[in-house]
Every structure is written in structure tokens, then in C-alpha cells.
Length: 269
Image 1: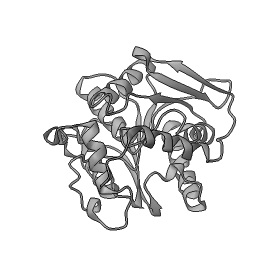
Image 2: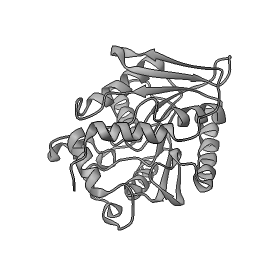
Image 3: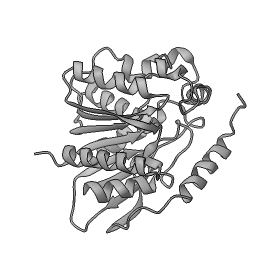
Image 4: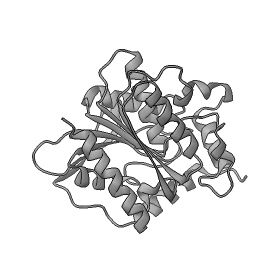
């Protein structure tokens, strides 16, 4: 494959985001600084305080930012009646593993949200952050919401090699080489390969039928359930990776289901 240019990838992601409809207006949207200067964007759907959800954006560890996922965070805040704290974590290759995990973990420690969520690479960061907090005996959020998650950085699940799926497997290999340069280190950063998944928060895992990461997301949901974690798992038919960003009727319907599930988890009991 042609080696991608990181600057061009990031600019392309911003252009695509700018071409989508703007998300709903909210009571308050403001940019703030978190621990160690991490860029954050705080969304409030109403003047009164609501439960807090921390969100980590996708982007293959090398792209994506607060602006590319602004619409998604606005939609979650409005539809789920939650405050959303979006994390502009450090990206590879300038800041390889575990810099982004450090950033998301620091935000969770400071904000103590009811849930942590993410799509794609952001869902991977959410899983690793929950595992880190569990292992260090620190408070965990009540829920983890994982949309099209990376869970096996060894890229050994069958859907990686299935024809016609997105994203391209060669691109994934390239992106992971920027996030974790040494092949031998990727298994240790793969949530699916962690021996013990007990004691983790309730999980919502949503995968997509035509997603290269489909099988590792499905497998992670099964392993969580086997470990005694309460799991809601759904594979969305006919959709591709990153459908939370799409505007098609099918993606919109899938997002409506996602938002209902998030609402039930965040406002539970």
C-alpha cells in the first residue's frame, strides 16, 4: 500500500466532518483543559447537571479530534440526556502508546463519570482505561460503551481478512505500527487477549456487519459475558465501521438504538 501522510489524513477527517450536518444545539458547549493540559470539550444538554459520560473519539490512533466528533457528541448529549466530556487525547505517531491511554485515564480519575464511551480506536482506549483502573484498584465508571472497538491489535480475527470490509486491513496494520511500533508489544495492549476480564463495568458493545473489526468486537462481548460482566451486545446488519458518523437512514436508525441503550445504562437505577 502507499504509505499514508498523517497530515493529509487528519485534514481529510476534518473536511469530512465539516461536510456533515451540524449536531443539535445544546445549553452549553465549551472547550476546557484537563489534566496535564489535555484538550476537552464539555457538552451540557440542559442548564441543570446531568450524568457525565466521557467520550474518546475514533481515528485509528492517528487522526480524529474534538471537531471531527463534535456532531456525535452533541447527538449523544441531546438524545441520552447526559453531559459529554470529549477527550482530545494525544495521537500517534507523535505520541505512541500508552500516551492516549494515560490521557483518558487521567480524565476519568478527575471527572469520575458514570460511563466511558468511544468508537473504534476510542473504544479501544475506553477498554484499556477500564482495565487499568481495575488493576490499580481505582474507582470505575458504571458503564463502558464500545462502538466498533479494536480489541485485538494482533489482527488475528477472521474478519480482518474478509473481502469487502472496511477499513482496509493494510491501513490498520500501518496505523497500528504508528500507535505501537513493535509487533511483539501489541498483544499486551489487546483487551481481547487479557486473561481475566472480571470486575469490569457493565458493557454495551455494538459492532457492524461489514466492519473489518467485527469479529474482535463480537469476541470481546462474549468474553466479557463469560467473565460475569453484564453485557448488551448487538451486531448492526448492513452497516460499516464508524457508522456513528454516517447520515444514511440505516445508520440513523442504528444510532437511535444505540442512544436508547446508552440512556438505559446511564440512567439505570
